[in-house]
Image 1: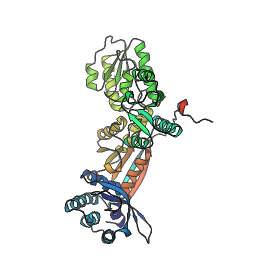
Image 2: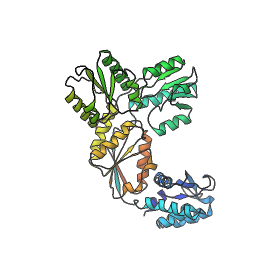
Image 3: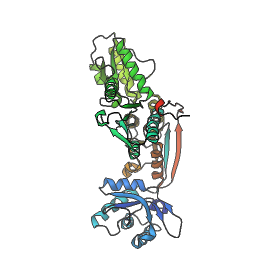
Image 4: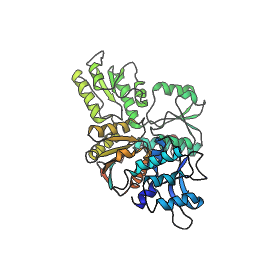
Length: 425
């Protein structure tokens, strides 16, 4: 084990930071008489400790403030003696049970450390124009008006984004009855139904609409098709906020179709008056299978002039498809409620490559990396780019890492902000 690999997964108690029972996972080692040393693999160890029920804190380890820790460091870092030595360094005066658990966590990480690996980044990845627009709307409102700024549902489906905005004064609510009358409320990027807009009017709320323009397009199509007397078959997932909003545009004339099996069973009043729409974040391949069945059953089926699955979803799927076939493992950065992120995991798995959805580097399990040399890495359209960077950094803490990128297209789309938040000249 190299010096770098050992220091990258160091954990130690710190007398000033963690609460009782917590373990400090050092992301930087500080000495009084020498330059500091970064510990890039800290996130991987922190995640393994948490999965074993160990409370953690992150921060610098001041080696010269704790004689016992300093002695352990001198023993562990230069010699890199393996899991047992690292366990001693981690636990200090902790209980034997905690010491054993920390030692086991370190052993799990050490087992996959030291070997060369490569990361192949899919491009495009991370934020799309609609997500950037929605986040910027909330950020500008907070800067212009201060908190609280109310947001109906999550502004985008990413835990890190929501937590960051919440810390800055955004208040996320499930329904409008939690918003004080007359307050400012932001509608999320996923859109809302006409009933929600009507309720906002009744409560005299100051609405700032962050709905992605591509979702707005689908809503307009639903109104137009239903207004022509068609039955609208909406391909999507029940319970998703975008689907709920679209269904609300013409609830009496819209039928949700979630799978090929449902496409085989769906009934319509007039088979000659049928149109389809799709959720913007679906799998391109699976949607094509559903459409094939619908067209078989309804030869007169019509659709929108351009695809509803958004450019960002399609681009990220195309990029990952190219990466997955040349890698041993795929990691997709995104939250569990992100539809487009989940579809990326499914796409990689259909290509025969093991894939996992991770919120951040702490979710990377050491056993996934066993025997793996080539890692594909991407992120859903609502995941911040910095999270991808942190995963690359953490993987680099395990040993030599080569990083490359495969770009299948370049995105240049930008959506205009609502008038209410544009900077005044």
